Image (cartoon, rainbow, N blue to C red; front, side, top):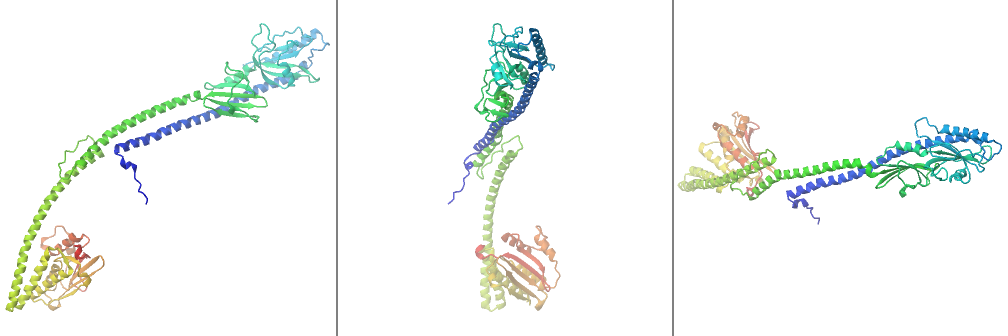
Length: 602
């Protein structure tokens, strides 16, 4: 058998239910607030990362454009005829000719080193291996912010020279610590350089190595154009060696998370979002270069955290306001309700009702309190009224019992007169006394208000016979009542006034032509009794039916038929009663509409 579901709230009072309602409202707000902040962080990180990806692409494109411009210039210098004819080991040139060639090469490289767009200048220098020291007159003091042609011996060879020659004319970027072997008094020579070996077009072999210095300054300009909140920008090679960066203090190798592994991809952009940093890496495997943005998440979310603090402050104020409102609501609503519940539990009908508590409000609670107190007073009045009416009803019942004594005495007296007249041989008087005795007996009906239709017909028949003996009326009476309707109950003395009206107003002066019919028909729920006469006088049936429904009828109209109509309605309801209509063939037809009720249902 299935158990009926029990609502757990039914075991809680209103105070507990309100507290539960408060929790139901507040807890989802806290959860949604936390989830909203979490999702906002994720969305902000993703949107900012996408913006940094686009910025990184543009930044990397500008850097590559600068490097490509350097590569084009070196290609131009590569093809210069003066440089291609340079041969330190040749002995066919005089010292003067070598000096002139040196000066021309110096001017050539100086011209390429001049910048006209107010950008950080680049310095082009040519390093030539001179084992025989044929260019002994050329100074050898290279610097990162100077250009020139430098000839060196085996002892003075830079550590990167053989590396550049091994690449066979392919240019590359290299972080150079020293442009020449360290010597006493040499300044800071650390620079990012573009290095490319110059090969002889006409003969096999290497003429020298062209070095473009101060490239870190040029790339640094491009990095300075990018604005990152406390972020770091690094330009590295594929081994994560830092070639240049926007920050001054940094290590030689950039530490990246394991997720930053490039894999086999040649060109592309990769982004990694960790708990502390956002990394955006733009890489080119062909050029062996990377541009890395490293942005602290805390700095990125600082502005959002300020917004969160404002939202949290608003939430705290909202929660405090909600709590204050709940307390005010409890004081304003629940305290009067508790007083009202206390009054309702202690109140018993008939007890004295105290004065209605006054409230300086006109809300529903005030209306409810005043209504309940007024209802209690009205209930007290009703109790007192019912008590009074019960007393009056007892008195009325006693009066009715006293009034029944006289008809009963009269009924017994008529019985004695009937037997004496019968013994004296006065048969007409005897018959009339007998009929009158029947009328009195049925009128008493042992105090019953409802009698069977059979008893009511007996009462009506006695009245008809009494009237016929009294006035020598010759009218006929036809009774057609089905036997199954005889046990149906009817208010007593309902037919007699209608028959009396039919005699007086219908057939009294018609002699043997007069006729009164009493018939009935019914179904499972209703019965209809018809009292008809064939009188010839005109009758206003609409007026009669209208007077039956009036609350204050005209006394001249009489009370007989209205009394019948009202008694039927009082017993059975407004759907039943008496009505008048014209009889088919002339005369009047009175109809009694009653429910089909048996004696046991009275």
